[in-house]
Length: 390
Image (cartoon, rainbow, N blue to C red; front, top):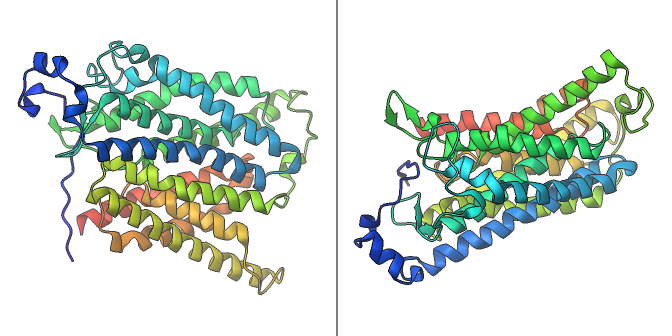
């Protein structure tokens, strides 16, 4: 069965699109112009995306050493709270205001402008800007929480919180603007509005957060090597190079379950309405995660057999890493590609994550953020382009 989707960028609001004047719109009850189902789905999806943050904390705390488990949970939640404040103050207006291609104006500082007017992204779907601001705020919080996994045992938490606050303002917000705002610079190609094929943040969320995590870890290693600073969480010289096993597999499984459930809001909610695109995105998300989990389990099984260690046993961590890799890979394409192609994303994402898994040890990325989110994100972008061109 063939499927055809129209690729759209967000269009500016015009009261004429509702067949009323701007004055009449402001005078009437705004609830008249919105579908309760669409609005409910966006709000539920926002909650599902927020659920992914404690999922990340559980996942990271489970695969890390025991001494870092509580800190990992706290830091991911604290990062979410901090970025939530930043998004409310000026993050949204930097990202989604209508002026400038790189940096937004100040008309929506602290949600000051009239956010009851529609925010239109797909034909036939209209939701108020306030709900869209809330939904995108969850994306900003989750992206920062991904980066927080790189900060454990790499300096003081306060230093990271200052860094992530500035990073969200000067890195994440402009990049999100370039991809998801209709006036963003990457939406223009040769003077035309073409749009970016990134449905739910393969580049904006995963590749950006993974690259930031890698740079943060590399800088930490360089800082220790060049300056030989004595106080870096009081760890001994070789502690970060020692291999260790995840201390709590149950936390890893619970974190994966939270991420899996939350990803339906992450991808399905990006349709901005209770529609067939949301259904297709959710199906693609689930199938890609299933394919990634099976692939990750098989690859770990084969690797264990070759090492003659735990031969004949499946790895729970391999299953979880594969599932997350599949979820990351399908993110940029969930609402664009036909769902029969979803297993390709899961298999390819999980395979390349396993292939590049060892490079994390080179720069102290103990939680393998760059590999799981960065490599799988790039795989998703490439397979997305290939699938859409077929």
